[in-house]
Length: 363
Ligand SMILES: Cc1ncc(COP(=O)(O)O)c(C=O)c1O
Image (tube, rainbow, N blue to C red):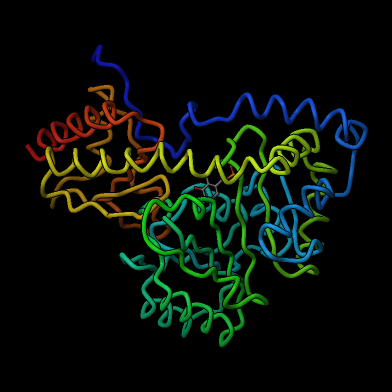
């Protein structure tokens, strides 16, 4: 085994140096002084009321349209408990977030991947699949997609919203990276285009940190109250202690400057990743994200992600297997590069090792 320092291009974890530890300590003390009895008690499954109100006002919706939970992934699980039965059809992008695919499979859904293009899902492929099936929902990550880095264009968002209306299915819009735009203009949410057909979800995992497990959904109050019922039957109430602290941190107007700090930290890491790819792997043709945590490359013909992953490990370079992101196969040459938790020097060294590995595997 190599004695090189390990470099992890495995999962989309935030940089620990981005965590606003001191401000969270202050918010914890203040929130416990003010709301201690509520934060240490059970409460409604919709979430800690002041936080729900704050989120509603931030996102421009009514308080009865918001549900908080312990991370956004578990809210997807609750949605699946309510909406799916074995064999239910769910569309996702292909590639998509691997943990959602795992979760959908656990619910025995039939997952159909809609090929993703540089500007969002292929509308032609979506229309073809809609001739064959009516999905319960289409899970889509329109902003700085995990794992590809792609952002859905405004035109495609309009087409997707129109298709959801026409074919009567729900859009599950997952947007944890939306606030982390390093350049370019923000696109409207699917929720803005089809508010009655969209559940929008997001998370503080990439803004404060994953530790507080604070995710949220907004959309149709009747549907959210059903999901809240599943939540209540699972954990009674979400983590009021952590959510109370997060609320106080937000109330103190910490979010906007934190987002600026994150952009200033991460944008140069994206640039470092693109620069290292241009130097060491000039044929890699990476995606060119405008924000978020990920970019991706297509490996050269004949070079498979599984072999690259195994060979990279001998250089202490750890990668995720690209296959897991594709619900219906494919992705043999797909490689995701999460760059946010690495310094520019580590990124440079990691891509150098990756280039060596790919050369070795292509033999
Ligand atoms: C697209 C996407 N959705 C959901 C999550 C999970 O978020 P949470 O920590 O809120 O459960 C992640 C985390 O990486 C993600 O990339």
